[in-house]
Amino acid sequence: MSKPFQIALGILAAIGGFVDIGDIVFATTAGATFGYELLWATVLGVVGIIVYSEMCGRVATVAKRPVFDVVRERMGFGFGLATLVSSQLVNLMTLAAEVGGVALVLQLLLGLPYRGLVAVALVTLLLSAWFLPFEWIERVYGFGGLLLIVFTVAALKLGPDWQQLGAGFVPGLPSHGTELLWGYFIVGLVSAALMPYEVYFYSSGAVEEGWKPPDDLGLNRLNAGLGFGLGAFLSISLSVVAAQLFLPRGIDPEFLGTVGLGVLNPLGQIGLLLGLLGIFFAVTGAAIDTCFSGAYNLSQFFGWEWGKYQGPRGAPRFTLTWIVFLGLGFLIILTGVNPIVVTEYAVVFSVVAMPLTYLPILLVARDEGYMGEYANGRLGNVLGFLYLGVIAIVALSAVPLLVLTNMGQG
Amino acid sequence: MTERKAIDLGLGVLDQELVDADGGRCGRVDDLELIGGPGEPLRLTALVVGPATWAARAGRVGRLAGKLYPDGETVVPWSEVADITHVVELKKTDAELGLGEGDERARRWLSRLPGG
Image (cartoon, rainbow over all chains, first blue to last red; front, side, top):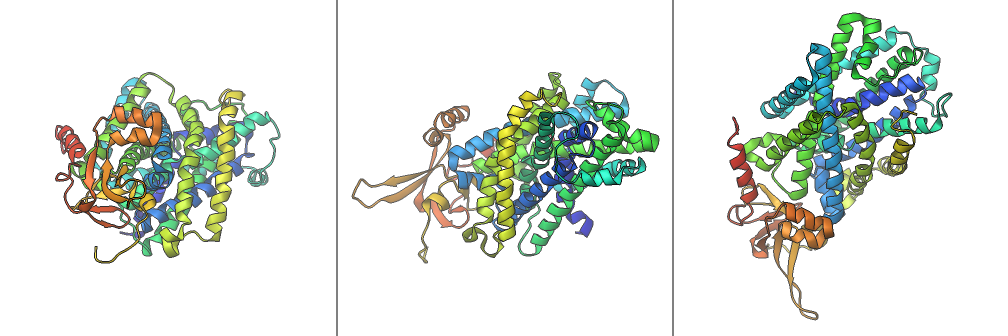
């Protein structure tokens, strides 16, 4: 396989996971509300997901164990089941939000009625997931999502104040707005970066691709670092555009269309088209990520045969699970709930599944009896425990902040 | 097994994946069947797989999950275990051991779809 394709897994996991509908909304709203002042929160989040996705990829490469394999083994049946139930609920909410998100982008692109486009979104997802081989799903949606780079171009063309922008990478209290709201956005940005389905998908993908030590461990580091780094870069670009365009005008980008307008102003129609296509690929990729994650988790927990590479006959319960999952996500959106609201809930509630997911990974990745020479080094352990602390703080404050700020409405 | 090696039942067998003679995953070890009273030698006689064991392992939630997925339990005699590696390897196929029903049922559903 040629080099650019080898990092497709990281790019899809990151584009789909990082700049999914939840992050697009949080990053843009954060920029529109606090300007550059929260850029550091995205960096805080991305370092965490790089640390943990690298561990998950390493465990999957060395021990051939994806995340839920490890969860069941280390946490036992009871805690494992609790982890499974909470992560599946979050997966389903996220999937529903992404299905709605795909329909919203299609509406902006085609101008047809939303409800019909929800059905189009479902069919697009079903056909892609059923007919495309795993590598082509990665390539089409991962690389397609890179079109979001037009937001970086737009951010540069608008001419940001570099000094202020640089200062945004240093944590500090907000210059305006309430501290509660500020806290809510930090929690939102950090959790959007650390959404557990990214590692479910990434680690299972590493097994799907048959990564082997020691050669593929470099590939794992590259995928985790470059893939998620790129995701963060695009997410920061969205924030920077919003900070320049929406903050001075007092616009609250609660519609996906407003996000698109961010590129229309500096780049014109072509920019808008490319930006919307980028969002389309990223969000569709995220929908496939979450849908497969649901099936990976369930299959791994119960020991069923799983994997897209096995085909429907080789892994029937896995296949049936993702189809049912997609159907459920579709039904949730069909009730008429606003996908943007669902996504905010999904991001905030994902903090419940986070400690349960990341703790067993850390325990296994640092276990020399298990990982031999490939166990965590000192840096991996320090960062691992540090981020477990960050996750714990985020997890404890998420729901109170959600209630106190009325979902970021102030 | 010619070479004797220590097996950690809690970490190396319980909750581990079962892999059949064809190399297919076919469930997880949900429970262990041990025989022997107090003061007697304790012998591992079988591995138990299936939702009927969940209630004992996860209380109310386990019982609920067991009800949602009422497949009872399958007992795999310890003599059918070929090896313990990072998974539990079995000597026979999933169908021979009664572990293949779930996949068969799902396959029947999928066969109605194009390409299934």
